Amino acid sequence: MLNQFYLTELYFGGNSSYSDDIFKIQKRIIRIIMNSSRNASCWQLFKDLNILPIQSQYIYSILLFVTKHKDQFLSNSQVNKINTRQTFDLYVPTENLTVYQNGVCYSGIKIYNHLPTAIKDLSDDKNKFYLALKRYLFHNSFYSLEEYFNTYFTIIVTLYILLFILTLIIVLRLLM
Image: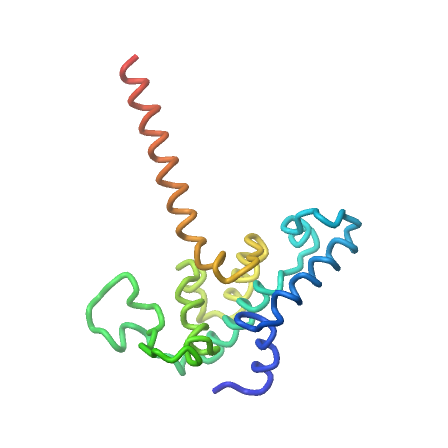
C-alpha cells in the first residue's frame, strides 16, 4: 500500500526529528522573501504567499495518501454495526506499538478522522476534496499536529463563550 514516493515525501513531516529544523529554515526563508524582521510572526506571511508550513504540507500529503487508498482502510460502519456520529470515519485499529502509531497509515486515519465533516464528505470527488482541503489548510496554516488536533476544541470553547455572552446580554436586557 505504501510506496517509496510517499515514504520520502512524508519523512520530513510529522514525527521526524528533522521537521522542526526544516520548519525553522522555512520560516527564515519566508521572512527573507517578505523582507520581515527576524522575530516577525510568519503565520500571516504564509497566508500572503499561499505557502503551507511544513506541518500543513505533511497533513496535506498524508490526507492525499489516505483518500487515494481509502479502499484499503475500514470504516467504523464496517467494524461496528451501531450507528454513531463517527460511523463514516475510518476505523482506528487498537495497536499498542509506538512504531505503528507513528506510522503513516495510523497517523493518516487519525488526521483524516479529525477533518471537518464538510471536507470529509467531498473525499469521493477528488478535485473538490483537494480544493477544499487546500483552502482549509491555507486558512489555518497549522504549525504542528497538536495545533491541528486542537482546532475543534478551540472552536467549541469559543462558541460556548459566545453563547454564554449572548445569554447574559439577553438576560440583562430582559431585566432592564
